[in-house]
Image 1 (cartoon, rainbow, N blue to C red):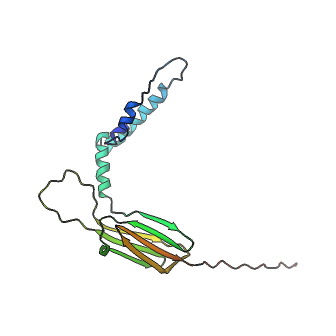
Image 2 (image 1 turned 120 degrees about the horizontal axis):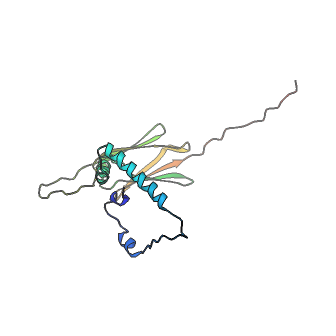
Image 3 (image 1 turned 120 degrees about the vertical axis):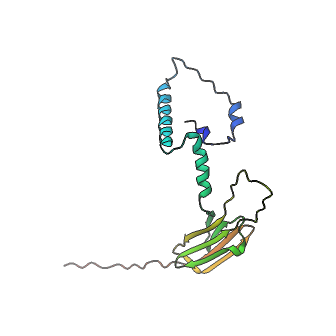
Length: 182
């Protein structure tokens, strides 16, 4: 199986074309033919597995792309910790502020929302569509020192910034226990 078939576009193709890689076999160089045979056998095994699912290696990229399109919308989250707070930044491109809901339940921060499809006209024909629409939900478990009473959220240019205050955590108290002779 040629791995390049899985990638429809090789961004480094020109770079590879300009780098000459001469290969010569001589008695002083190790014989790599057994390794090449193992690689070919592995490629054949993968092709057999894909064929058993009704996929040829050329159709695999198409099927993987289709599966990726069917994945639910899942916004990415960056989490940063400072001494005073936790800062969560959630990317929500194309989502309107009024379509985002944020709530705290017990020790979880729940983010819900919906990216709505734009109004479409019948003037053009789509040849390929990668943008994802639909509802999403992310649940973030807050750490022990997070203060659910001190949460603020700001939405600016498609990024939701959530600031969660931190509180000091009580350390368990210890006391020595004397051991008496029996």
